[in-house]
Amino acid sequence: MSIIRENADSVDAPALGPLIYRQSVVTRITHWTWAVCLFFLLLSGLQIFNAHPTLYVGNESGFGYDNAVLSMRAVDTPQGPEGRTNILGHEFNTTGVFGLSGPADNLKVRGIPSALTIPSYRDLGTGRVVHFFFAWLLVATLLVWLLASFFNGHLRRDIAPTRKDLQNFPRDVADHARFRFHHGRSYNVLQKLAYCSVFFILFPLIIATGLTMSPGFDAGFPWLLELFGGRQSARTLHFLAMFLLVSFFVIHILMVLLAGPFNELRSMITGWYRASPGTPEIEGDKR
Image (cartoon, rainbow, N blue to C red; front, side, top):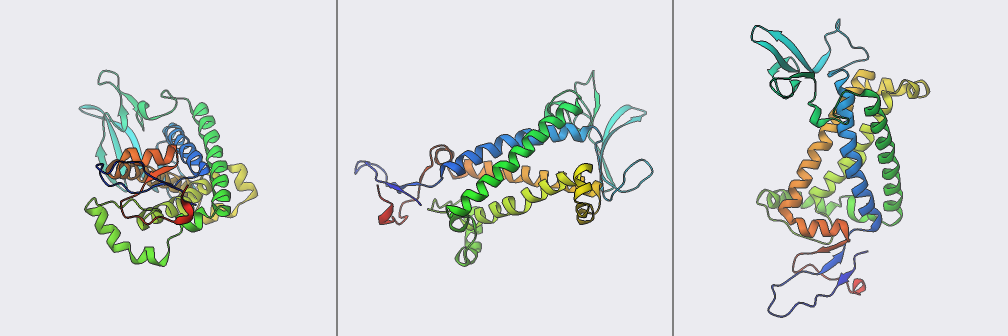
């Protein structure tokens, strides 16, 4: 439930909208926990990827197969070693970034540069430990958020798009294209659709594909291999889900900066959010 804090601004001050209590304690704690988890999951996941920087479709992989959709490697050329990245049969010279990276006088054969992995040096064992720890922390936090949001009405009230939200979709797209942001009591339809995609598509997909890559888990749930078309396909979908989550994060940060970083950060730290002038006040919410 939103709470309105009455302003004590002078009559000469610019008109301000009401200050509402928008984010609950559970939402704020889980939000920042996810941010930490995704940071360590991404960089430790890239460490694991470097052990074999190639993605396949199907259940098998190796030199005798032609089912790779992405590869990062180093090749010898008459001009010297080069980093090559192959995406769906299209090859690019990515020396210094992917396949072969590091200082010009000390290039290392690595799929992903050391600056983007945890640990920065080659250590698959430590990378797996870090990855699994934060993966289970992410799952536990997601379950806590789902239960709390179901019982306190956050899912129904703030996340699930309504018919009116969907009717406003074209207008919201046009407003965002013009950088016109309305700070309302609830999320706009683009936010709701994005959050639903993350919570109910990308998070379940990245968790399920991660479990499918575990031989022990496959022994108990062999249908997962059939669902995702094999362990190698699950690995590829896992990285695709990661890429989409990173894309969401980048867009999310961009929107925070454009919509007013102080107001947005205050909302996720203290719970209080400054709505736009003219936002209707709910009598029962006043303190």
